Length: 154
Image (cartoon, rainbow, N blue to C red; front, side, top):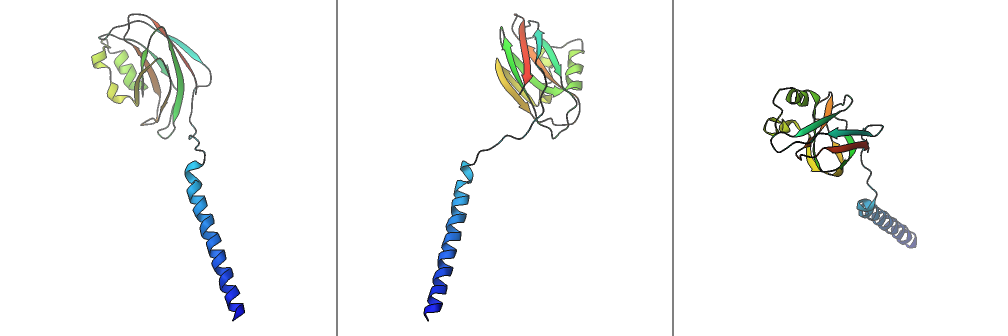
């Protein structure tokens, strides 16, 4: 009889130890550090000037990105001096069709093709291309004053 008692007691203690260990592991999961998935970026800073414009006819410039695949996250840091800019990550073909249309106005800008569309003075722009190919980051300037945009690795 005493041997059976000790065996049962050891099994119960072992089971409680395993249950508590599993509980502690699951309870600590939210406190583990989360790392962002890797992304592509430009390798060196690039500065562009964007001429002034207005609400009807914005000034614009494009940063042509390397060929991206549709599952490759891309990020770039932007800093605007002398104003704000509206940024759009867009397929290069859609942007170029607008820019060379002979009538590149705000109302004809293909914003529905933008993977991101944000107005800022400084930010890290991160997007996931919706299809493989050549992409642009378009900078639109709705102010009459020329601005400068510095793109840098993110």
